Image (cartoon, helix red, strand yellow):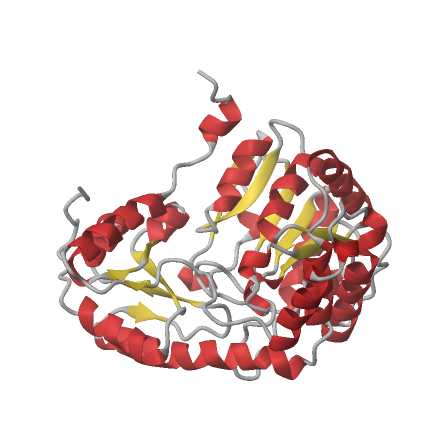
Length: 390
């Protein structure tokens, strides 16, 4: 009786189903190889951890952090954007710390939309996007991400009569690992400005790029009508720290700050110090983690192709997005794979209707473990529609 319409509208999580399947596998004595959750297994840089240790011994970090206390982190974020992307932002008015990018998006939608507004969402997409839309009480309008278009949306295909308030993008992409170039963001920003739409770019994989590829920023297309969300969870392996930042359009940043001021304080000052230090580290430090994920990609992708699965070689992110031949029920397949082999993957349907037929692998295990996962999955037959999960 106490569930609001907003709470009731939040989609249920397929991952609870996967957790149950993993438990059944362990009960059968199987060693579980969990590739279903995109949480980096690498450690933050030593200097970051040392900064946090030092901060915990400083009584000045124990109080509520005020906006003025966030200046070092805001300035570090602004310096990072300038150094990495050539983007100039005002640390005082165009940057705001977040308790993770996921929190930032949920509060941003509350700050810049009204109930009933339309939001253009990629399909497939990171599942919490759907929850943020539900909590904000806005209408999700799916933008198909198709393999033949490189998993980039066709903005000219937005249905007639739809007047969106927000366009949400995410490149490098979760779950598809697709990437976008700077020209794409310039086109998207121009499309949005012509229609009075706020472009929101979720950019947590900015530094998890491979080879010569470097991910651009949507802010390279200008700050007017553009907000970008950054997280240190993937780039600096600080997922449990819950810290990131938003940058871009000053009006949208001010609206977000107003909403956040009503519901939370800023991250613990010690975490802010650690994050500010992380953002100022030499680029070579971040490339160490990227190289580790690249080696994992190079182990898993060929092994999946040997199974006959169609998978592109990702240029970035921490995922491999694989189309499984004849697969018509990815949820049932993922449950079956976990129960029978102990290998847990994310079913594509968990990311949206366009995810059906795919499974997502998180590259969160060493190369030899990923090869073992592929060997185990070779024994899982795919015969059209799988049996429904128990």
